[in-house]
Amino acid sequence: MNMKFHSTSGQCRDYSLEQVLTAGLAPDGGLFMPDTIPSLPREFIHNLPNHSFAQIATRVAEEFMCEVPPTTLQTMIRSVFDFPAPLKKLRDNLYILELFHGPTLAFKDFGARFLARALAYFLERKSEELNIIVATSGDTGSAVASGFFRVPHIRVFILYPSGRVSPLQERQLTTYGENVTALEVQGSFDDCQALAKAALNDPELTSRARFSSANSINFGRLLPQSFYYFHAAAELQRAGARENPVIVVPSGNFGNLTAGLLAHRLGLPVKHFVAATNRNRIVPDYLATGHFEPRPSEATLSNAMDVGNPSNFARMLELYQNNHRRMARDITGAGITDTETRRIIQKTYHDFRYLLDPHTAVGVAAAFKIGLRDLTVVLATAHPAKFREVLEPWLRIKVPLPKRLSQIMHKKKKSIIIKSDLAQLKQAIRSQIHV
Image (tube, one colour):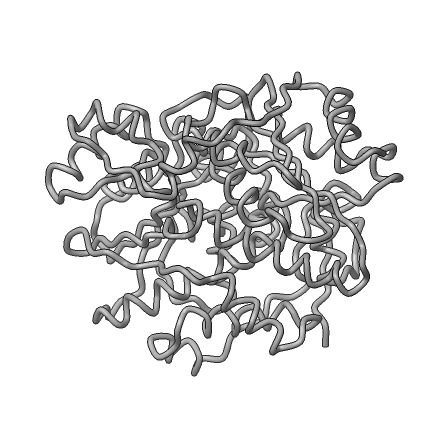
């Protein structure tokens, strides 16, 4: 029986997976969620260490992707997740799950590559075309550009805030061309996200062509991010762990944490979650007070997490039926300053000779801030070399640049500069797809 989906806004129901992935955002402006979240068999959870990443991912995906034949799904997953996600021990009770070994050296590769292949499967069956609009504060754009590059039937528009991503991140998302168009927005990430949502709901655009999103508002981006939580549990058990972990998630738009909460509902053995943010601590403030108050984002060292109105909070609320007390029992919030971020990067390198990027550093700082009384896993979101211009002066070292990054720095940037204005965005889109 196929899984059905509904919108968090409550007006759209009975959507299939294909409709959810190709729509991205629900027509009523909400985010799609499955009608039911099943429980994985206890035997499967107990035997996680005996399964490969691909086997774990396939088993979890099968619960939501009945519309894709099992053999097709298996092949898709094996081709998408062809890179490792090692668990590194930093010290007693503290582990780092390195999610940055994909093509663009960021955890977003998991979701972007999976979504691209899933969409390609559905579009190929009907020979249909689809336009993707995605807002990025850093690594999402490069992962989407890489994952969707030359994928048949799909054209991608990436909106990023001018001057607010690192030089390497900008090169990664602006040097592809062909079916990938980079739009450099004179504004913040929140402006980019608002523009993307406005375009996806614009009657003039959507009446002439099909549009969807590759942000974590698309359930197809969220689902694959749940896979590596089970992988982390398997790796801990292989390492001899006898207790359920606290998982610390560096958070911006909160797709990554929402994926962890989804995994928890599916049966993931976890003791607690920590939502680690920078100064943009909207969700930690909610967890502490019960009041959700979005505000303009502030620029920080962990730029990809500079989000003042996280979209996936709507999904978090639904998972907890708008019950603040229940959510706060499962999740602790921690806001980290730039000073704390800098200090933990220096301390971690000095004590362990381990390099942290500024985003993972927020997670490690949060782990220390709440105290390391329990077995703790911090999700490492990006390769530190992507931020070497920040790290090198602090640590007084030379950060090696991986080959795939050094090659990109020699490519020519291609972007269309626009104001934070829907009319300009629509004009830029029309120039590329002629609608």
